[in-house]
Length: 342
Image 1 (cartoon, one colour):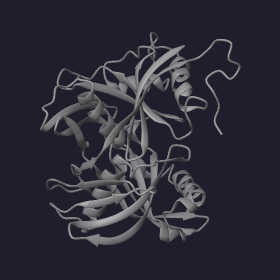
Image 2 (cartoon, rainbow, N blue to C red):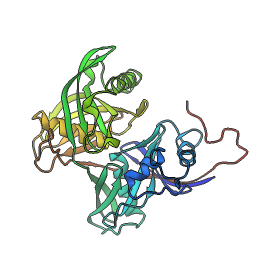
Image 3 (tube, rainbow, N blue to C red):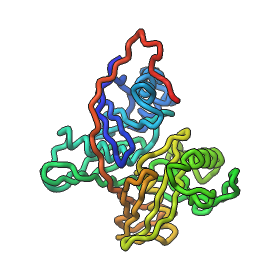
Image 4 (cartoon, helix red, strand yellow):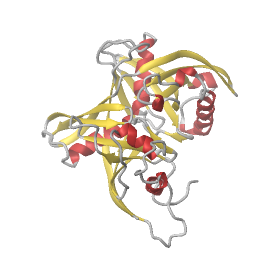
């Protein structure tokens, strides 16, 4: 097996873009291709899910990857209006949305020449993801990419103060659907704070809350059942407001206990919608959103809308940098195969 990738990081979270070596995934849309990748598509011509998973495991396991690795398979877009499509993946499977990955893909599309861009100015890269069409506005200065603003699908808040029983007591969580479903709760409500030293406790709390919400009506997506279920739990600290709006630090625990090193792009969309629903973020104001390692996304709601009904459009800005280009090999005689997780 030979797999070629180009790697980026967005605010510290890795994103590995597979350029070659993955099997072709049939389907008429990115969402359908994800269903087929999960083994739920019912397509007789689909590659065995394990064939695609062999590549995913190879890239997310040691010695070629690690349990915190994230990435995407490039696939055709749903129609000619978009530049590319992508199936997002992590160590546990395939996600429906990924903001930091969208930021990285926007930078890559311009850096690679897939989308022509001016030396100075902004160019928009349209990307089809399993939850819909998103846009990455790539900012350019002096021939370099200096930042990317990700515009998400509309985000809907389904609960603001949903009681959840945990081993640390009952807490109230907010639930928002931002291409993926996120539950958010103040870390202080659990007797914690968002610091690297408390990551084991934060991870355990995130997994517990995710499991507790598995059967809640609030985590069901009425428009597309494939987007239902809590993907990530956002634990956050309140920091002093800035002159332009709220300021928070968060850690997002997603999938089966994976930690987002960035402030989480789609999770930032979720927080923007919740803050709007709470009356804490007005149009034109900005959320300064820090990660557990101190990196930064900024977010805003550029226009009106009701997060509790039709949802709000959100924009999240961050940076992405290329970290490497790789040609991974799997020797047929390698007894470790696709690798291992610790």
